[in-house]
Image 1 (cartoon, rainbow, N blue to C red):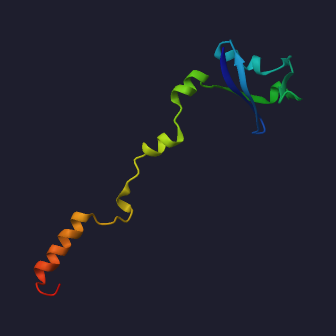
Image 2: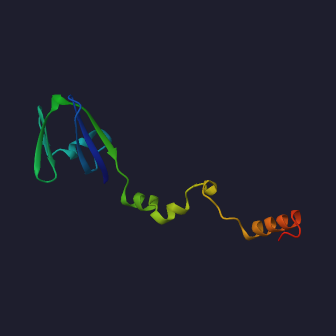
Image 3: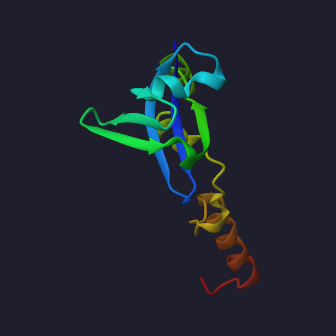
Length: 119
């Protein structure tokens, strides 16, 4: 069984989305599982298990069916937050850096070499 989000697009530019519709139908008939019942003039869609919505079939211009990933695919593609922090390509060269001990020693040797007797 595959899970879908089914979107009913109407003439006036509004959309009604029925989420997490489970269906065994082929793609062109998934919308039938999203509606409670339908007849020649209406589509009856139960929303949030409380509200029944009636759409005029002639007002529906398009029905989009988006297949959702299965739980197995979600787990396989899951990225933990901490893991993704370390996998970013964030460039640290823009941050101010403290000089290393070797750089400090080198600068001190240069100062001592260029200005003998002052230090």
